[in-house]
Amino acid sequence: MEILSPAKINLFLLVTGKRPDGYHTLFSLMAPVSLYDVLGVNFDCSGLSVTCDHPEVPSGESNLAFKAAALFFETARLEKQAAITIHKNIPVAAGLGGGSSNAAAVLNSLNIRFGNVFTTDQLMAMGAGLGADVPFFINSRPALATGIGETLELYDNLPQLPVLLIHPNISVSTAAVYKSLKFTLTKDKKISNILSFTKQTLFDAKAHLENDLEAVSVARHPEISEAKQRLLDSGATGVLMSGSGPTVFGLFSALRDAENAYHRLAGNAAPGEDIFLTTLLTDGIAAGKHGPS
Ligand code: ATP
Image (tube, rainbow, N blue to C red):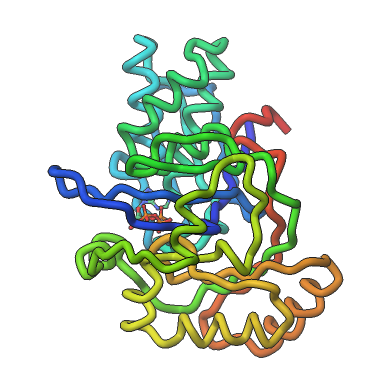
């Protein structure tokens, strides 16, 4: 069974508070994009194994996909029986949710293989124990996220816009970004606009693109604002860093414009930088849910 595991971007991300256990609470509009890792799942084996072809991602037990599969088999009281391979296309530790997506893909595909043992809500609850973004990838549909990211309300008002991603060749630690965050929820007009955003609100790049984590990452890595500027100069209608970065994205109103920008930017990419032409997946391709190919 070969399954696709999409990346996500955060169209806005406000940090709304800090829980007593140290986790930050968020309000975020998340959307999947058409950049995929490819997972292979073979059931003609005994035991559980996960191998990954990316040098910075562990194979075996510490891979999030392994933890997801182990949790599935234990909760379903089934004997562990899956050999999983992961081909990474999504940059790692990039603010694109790759590990969480892989974990959700495994939960979805095992659930299908073993006859829908769990409901979608049960899979989301299992995913929440693995990582705050995992429940989002069980559906992989645009959604408003609250809590630490695990409470989701589907958002159906997003157009299927083309999106260019630039992943600068730098590493950003999510934990370090949150640690340096000076938490002050300002009362400026843009922030109150976003705080009143509901699933009925129409997304408007000018009014709503905002990421509270961006200033922290930009202060350490000027490459991030420089990549945003290149996207704007190439015709993007709005640009932002995704999650804790360092990936930045540019929204385009027409595919032709995004393709032209992609060719221009890819031709002049900095060493080690990745550039991807994608679209928002407004109808979703739930990680691991589309079955055998
Ligand atoms: P986060 O904000 O949760 O760190 P991210 O999208 O920025 O998410 P990921 O690509 O998910 O980052 O990787 C985060 C870390 O998780 C990396 O250090 C990586 O080694 C580890 N990891 C474990 N399993 C996986 C996996 N299947 N795919 C990617 N990374 C994984």
